[in-house]
Image (cartoon, rainbow, N blue to C red):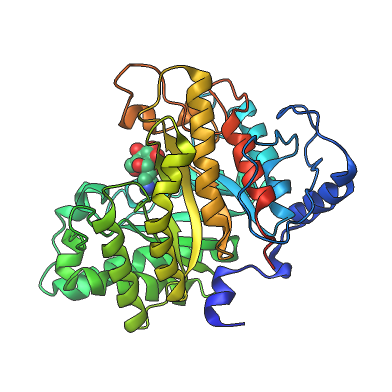
Length: 417
Ligand code: 9MR
């Protein structure tokens, strides 16, 4: 196995006991029919569709699969997961503290990622202090439920996402050495603390300015001698501190119009990593999708060509692909819930059909399972005032057509070897 394959793909040895059981349950249940309800079936009772010999588009009328999303994914050698959050007891914030949401996570997910709790702003209150209290509680809960956790992120390379203290930090008489020390210390502290409990890291997040494709600068990168050496050091330190983990560059360049400079900047960055021998295993394709109109399939088809050229270029360089933050902003759609949900589901399914035709895609993480906790409502509310519906489950944790669309796309995906 090549070094890249080792870090981007999972061997059979890495498939967890939970997934193995789900897979067996799925196979055992494959003879059963579906009752058409997304909520009715017991956990793990997965009707596994017959493998399709050629990668075709998934069925338009999405099969409402009663099985857990993860058991459908496991049967294809894939994982479905979600971000989750920490909250005070009884607070309602996308946390395992809400038993209804916890049930959803443990039922449908085969991998989790902290939404915010591992960012510098969360764990690094000052240059000399780390605080892992919230994330420790989250990973302990995930471990207790046999759910693997991937990490987000070791460096969000933009001034506004670094802690305020880091942007005004005094790097002293030898700024380069102090910046290197500070960054390496951060990454080593996280990686060594969690060891083999974390097998995949978003090492660098969103370093490319979408306006012109150039790399951002932060106080840290200026002190260290530039953005490139900063990002290189982040990945090299992560490889040394977590030698068995998949190392990901994560960004939101997407397939919608207006993203060409962003995509070009990401390709340039990935090409530079290769030239300099920087250990990056995969591109994290965040997948914060934005619908383009009511005819979701036609608008998706119009976007596919250029998007494929981008993915072809990424994979031709030898990078893996991870879908790290999937959700959908329901733009240019009417307020009517049924119409909106249908278009969101169709757009998601068309997108996943393209993504799943790349065998490198094995892990798909949603940026939240329920509309109730999605960041999008606060970030960009709809101009007509109706609530956004970006996730596979609604505010009351009832499955929406998007969930069935994800299940159908996974069911139609070629099995990963
Ligand atoms: O969903 C996250 C939101 O709660 C935070 O306020 C925000 C800033 O930390 O980050 C959001 O998550 C982002 C992720 O970390 C990186 N990609 C874009 C996500 C949505 O903005």
